[in-house]
Image 1 (cartoon, one colour):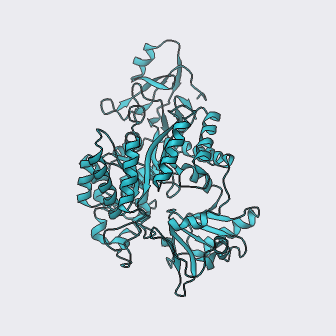
Image 2 (cartoon, rainbow, N blue to C red):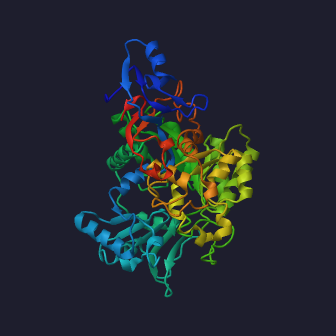
Length: 542
């Protein structure tokens, strides 16, 4: 196959799943200048156009390019430079991996790692400063739980950050202390910023390298579009450095991943500052490659870290209902201002209390400032109640689901919140049956960005090993076609891009992928092993 397509090209002899319910299957596509001009049968299209380039798809299964509705692309690339702690089976293994990394990278000012899950350890105990002191006594060491909401550091980092006995922080964060009031090196939610503030500052070149490495890996997995939360109070590079790096990368790579930026702000002042800056600094690249998406707020933490905000206490720790990271007044004020300024409203909400807070803010904002098609979004929406699903439907809320969470959380969710509350959680099928728009994402690097892992979890309700037999809450399993639609049309709809991507039909962007198997006609256990043979974006092989 040729590396680049110019002008008119016919792709023929394929098994094309279009995502268009009026014409679900086709053999051929006519592409001109990056867009699809026609879809149909081989001979019909070949006979229509004389002298154009013809590319034989060799019978491969073709689907629209996959679209991750929520991830952190810069952090994916940044984690490629950190200690990979994914799959660590014990605190001792975490320490061993960090020590190997420290020995191999003596130039690093701070040893940083991410990806551990203490629920996988035999003792299920969170690492502490004393574990990480075994990595280095005089050099700061920081490791971040897979969820990103909890970090652990060693004694050297505590000294650097000035965190000592009896330290207290605000209600939206926590520094764990032992019985003597000594910090254990465990930081939760907003308290993580107390140590991340000391990470070395990333340059534009650093961020551009992160973007390039992550985008290359993403397109290899079949992602042609991502909605990424890199802009806002999410890193140490600042939004100007971040957006400059994206702009430079796109200019240097005219064919490649399409990016829509989710904008995370926790204060009205920072939102207003960004909005003013944006008015003076229009995008310098094609809007089909990079665009601005919704305002995002953070309403709680993670289920695994017991910081998801619940309406009732945790079943395995009745002393807490989790962490409410913004007051209800702050949520409503931020979302209302964003809505008035023209931003789509969205927010991270995992626990049922956080979800209710988002819904109340949407209700109040839309009541005061009606909009015909606001499409407010809840990112994650894991621990829902049946009553909340009805309110979600009524308000026209879009759900950004991360089906891959099921594969991880099914091992702890009933322990955390009990069987009764679990029964209405991760309820993607119930949402679809109610007519609630659902988009598919990964929240990577929290979970792998490979979309076929998420698709598999949505269909099987199992972890990658096939546990449990028959699936966890099997009544919430969805079909393969429904899952693929979540990661194509669903994600495009979530950010108002459904008229240009998510389906292979006339006037749509020519973003599509060739698979090594017919994903619609295989055993569900094989979905996660699907490989991408080729990724085409705008009619170009990337």
